[in-house]
Length: 119
Image 1 (cartoon, rainbow, N blue to C red):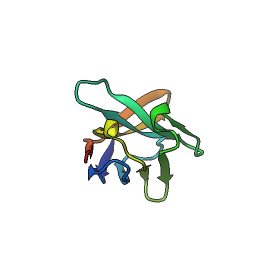
Image 2 (cartoon, one colour):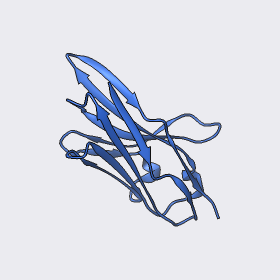
Image 3 (cartoon, rainbow, N blue to C red):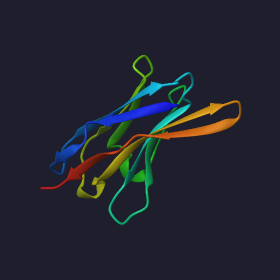
Image 4 (cartoon, one colour):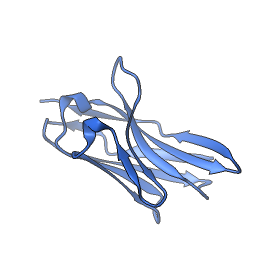
């Protein structure tokens, strides 16, 4: 089992910045992919950004150029630096970790952290 704990959410003005952190603990022998998803009220959960072992990243079009995902393997932590925030970025942001063991894909989720962008 892998436990994920997010931090760093909050209220920010449009144009501002926030950095989310997600610390993994537990049976973290192999985490192949870590990422951030978000869900706004009345909307489906959507992928924000992922980082794959080796460092390759992928972003939703809506956040490209504004958000940066990074991972500190020594600390088992993934970060999401969010700049130039817009009201439409308001959502609950959740951390996800994927571990593939003996051909079985295991998905783990954090509890989520609220990000509100408002003037």
